[in-house]
Amino acid sequence: MIIMEKVTGSGKTLEKAIDDALQKLCLTIDQAEYVVISNGGFFRNCKVEMWKKPTEGERQRDFLQQLLNKAGFDLNVTLSEDSQNINLNIEGKDSTAVIGYRGDVLDSLQLLTSIVVKNSDSKHFFLDCENYREKRRLTLIKLANNLEQKVLRTAKKTKLEPMNAYERRIIHTTLKDSTKIKTHSEGTEPFRYVVIEPLFKNSAEKNPQEKAKEDTYNTQRKQLNFVFRTKSKRPYEK
Image (cartoon, rainbow, N blue to C red; front, side, top):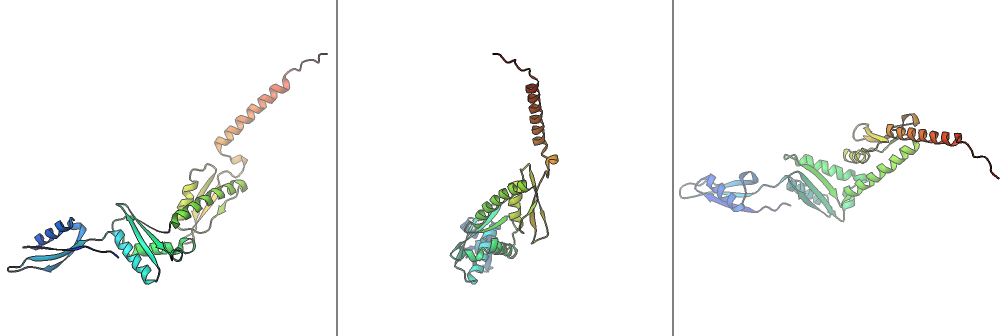
């Protein structure tokens, strides 16, 4: 829950009462919220009650924490926020329940939170649980490298199981610099998947650089064989 520090500002006019409260909180007007307690009158000052406006991340954390509490989970939501990113992390003994199969429950919670608490600051919102995302990222990188070797060995394309956009991006990024295979996505959400296929399916379609090296090697080998075979043999000496 967000704990807000509230102060009371007073002044002969509403503007002066607001300025008084802003000075006490060391905030600017766009960082604060307030309610008018009294509009003043004869021998009375105007009064306002003011508090710091919660950030996007604080509102998202508060919503998610209340949601998990009402669902009966023993979990705690922590927040890390800067000018561009909002990172929420769920921790606790019930963490497995909110991850789900391949992170599907975690993805749903992230989508729900971003819809209910609209991100007006256009920050990137990322939800994790017990470092699951990083563990999954490393698993996908290893999977991508293994499948690359399989595709090169069999010279046949392979299709991965359906993944969300975040996980598909990890596969594409891992293999984007390969000179022997290429990747692309097929299908429609939520069943969109990654396809990995060889760039060169047979010897006639080899990588131009590798083919040039092979041609150079074969030419040099032929020249050496020619020299060896045409070299006159020394007569046998007793």
